[in-house]
Each structure stands twice: as structure tokens, then as C-alpha cells.
Image (cartoon, rainbow, N blue to C red; front, side):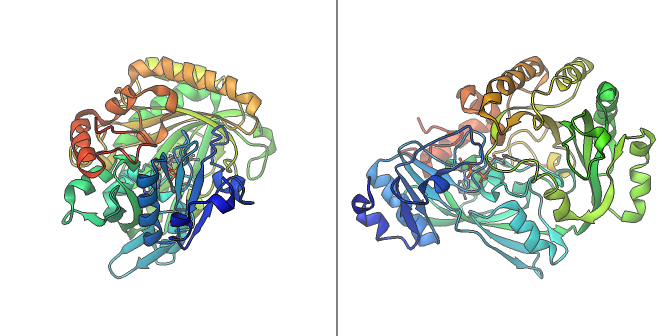
Length: 458
Ligand SMILES: Cc1cc2nc3c(=O)[nH]c(=O)nc-3n(C[C@H](O)[C@H](O)[C@H](O)COP(=O)(O)OP(=O)(O)OC[C@H]3O[C@@H](n4cnc5c(N)ncnc54)[C@H](O)[C@@H]3O)c2cc1C
């Protein structure tokens, strides 16, 4: 479709741009974080305000084109775009308004995590999000949101107070505990199934400077360190967070040269309590004499952006996730085996804790249904080179196959892949699935929003 044939009712109705393949910025606008996914949408509507989103939703409904909603574009499965359809692109709708008195932040639907950290940190405040600052608030929050503050403050959705939503019929509603509470329940974990969220309001907490960073040990201690970690963290103060990781040390500062390219195991810590107590809290960690002791006091946003350089947009990504309640010895042995075979420099395995405050919410209280999990376990094959996709995928699948019998059955909705099949969606929502179907019938009966982990109204 050339510019001359762009649908006049959409291009003329929105203040943002409508791009098709003839537009000079089309390739840049259609690019996704995961370069493995290459979709060519018919149209990209770069919305600048809620009125634009309403028009784009109307056009999507009337044109019959497949519709995808793009927040930060980080979906591993590429759900921020759609082949030959309409992308409702929120990437120009970015901004954060902090009310320090009320301790609230209003965040536009296309904002990325680092922008929220930056805006709230000025007031010594924060909300819990993920570990890479370029990830979109939209997708991460709608799937649940785990990260460096989960044990202390809960999931991102536990700090969500309200959401403004454009529904499939083009109407605009606010969802909160008091208004459209059924929709508010579904948005908290149900992904992009229920509408386009044009703004999120989050409750903020006093988090400013933290003590944290990675501590790494040589891989021959993997079984010992993981066995220690699975006991230590759940019993530690809730002010302490720490995700377990296998990594290859990148050949760059701040890592000492003797560790470059070494496969190691470690924990990335975040302690939000009184820094004077940090020595005591981290005592057991120091006793284990990490080879790379990276703990230091730092502004919270520094931790949340520490790995951005390692994971820029444009790499090939393939991941598999599961919720695990425990990490038994058999699973520890499988972890140690596959860690020794990390297929590329950037491939990794992370265990994000879902304990502490996140675990004090009932599974039925929000659509996110694995509050009883100990961890979100994610196995990630990553490399810039497309030639590495096959070995990275094979490693991730084999690793996941080995561990899946020790899992709780479902995977984290924000870390699934399209080749996993619809049954995964069901097992991911467990006892909440039927209610989600009911609400999908109410809010999106024609399944306009289906480029996601789809809860089909059928
Ligand atoms: C490098 C990296 C690090 C990550 N780290 C974490 C982490 O620490 N913790 C964690 O929980 N997850 C993490 N994730 C997973 C992340 O939560 C998902 O990839 C999430 O889908 C990203 O959201 P997005 O808005 O960037 O993606 P997009 O691809 O834009 O969107 C993903 C899905 O959400 C929908 N969506 C996005 N915004 C909106 C909106 N405003 N309204 C309605 N629907 C919307 C889209 O339609 C799509 O279905 C990470 C992912 C990557 C690639």
C-alpha cells in the first residue's frame, strides 16, 4: 500500500503518523526487540494520545485487519506486531507524572521501565518492575511483573492502583478496585487481552539507595551455591531480593580480565533495608567467598539498568519458562549440567523469586495465578548472530524438557514462546482461566485483541 492509498479515515483521524511499507521509517518502526521475529504489518499507527488510540481501535475493528498493540516491543514471542495487520503503536505515548505527596505515578501506556525509575527516583520513590530498563511498562505489568523488588513490594500489579483502558468497542473506561473491578482483576496478569491501556497509576514506596549487585562463583560450585540459595533466600528478610543466574562473564569492564568468557553462577542482589544492617544481611553471602563480589551501595535505578548494555535490542532471543515451587537436588544437578553448556555468551538461566509480599496475595485475587510459586524460572538462548539461533534454541528446549517435570505446570505469561501451544495458556492461568474467558466474552467478545497469550472467548 503506498502513501496515496493509506486509509484516509485513519490517517486523517489521528494526530500521530500512519506508516505503511513505503514510509522511510517503516523498517525502524516495525523492528522488535527480539530480532528473531520479523513481521511486516500492513499499517503502523503511531498514536500520540487516547483519542488516537480510540480511532485506531475503531479502524482495526472496522477494517477486519489483525490488531497488535505495541508497548515497549520486548515480547519474546513478538506480540507487539502482527503480519499484514494493524499495529497500534504506543511508543510515542511515553511519560510519567509523579505525585510525591500521594506517592502515586501516572505512567503512559508506551513508557519503558527506566523512564519510571528516573522520574520516581528524584523523589526517593520507586515501584517494582523488571531488571532491564528498556522493557515496556505495558506488557510487563499486564503479565504480572517480577523483578528486583518483588519480595519487598510484591509484583508490579500489586502496586497498580488504576488503569485507563480503550476497550474493543472503542469506549474508554477506568479500571480500579472501585470502578470496573472485574476488568481491573483481569488486567492484573491477563496480558493484553482486554484492551489498550493508555495509562497506569502505580503506588510508590520509599526506595532510593539500595545495597546490591551481582556476586559470582566459579561454575564448579554451581550445585553447592544453588542448594544454598534455595534455602537462604526464602528465609531471609523480605527487604532482601536476589535472583539466581548462570552467566558467561562478558569481556568488558567492570569485570576483571581473568574472568572474561568464564561461565559462572551467581546471584544479583537488591537489599532495600537500612544500609547499616547490610553487612549482617550479606554475612552468609560473604562467608561463601564469591570470586566476584560485586556488592555496593547504589541508586536503585543503577541496578535496574546495570545489564542494559549486555542486552541491547536486536539480538536473537528464545526462551522457555516455568513456575517452580522448589528446586530439588535432581533439578540442581540438571541446572549444573546445562550451565556448563551455556551455548552463547549472552545465554542465561534466571530464577526470579515470587516470595515475600507477592506471596501474601491469594491466587484468585488477581488473574496472575502462581502466588504459591517459589520462583519464575526462565531459560534464555540469546545471541546477535542468527546462525546461533538453532544451537541456542536446542539448548533452551533440552534444558527446559529436563526441568519441566519438577515444575508446577504453568509458565510465566511474559516469558512464553509461540511454539508452546494453547495448552500453556490454560496451565498458566490455572483456576483463573474460566473467569478470564468469561471476562473476555464481556470485554472483547470478537477477540479483537488476540495477538497475545490469547484467552479465546470461544
Ligand atoms: C530483556 C528483557 C528483560 C525482561 N525482564 C523482565 C523482568 O525482569 N521481569 C518481568 O516480569 N518480565 C521481564 N521481561 C519480560 C517482559 O515482561 C515481556 O517481554 C513483556 O511482554 C514486555 O512488555 P513490552 O510492553 O515491552 O512488550 P510488547 O512486545 O510491546 O508487548 C507485549 C504484550 O503486551 C501487550 N501490551 C503492551 N503494552 C500494552 C498496553 N499499554 N496495553 C495493552 N496491551 C499492551 C502487547 O499487546 C503484547 O501482547 C523481560 C523481557 C526482555 C526482553
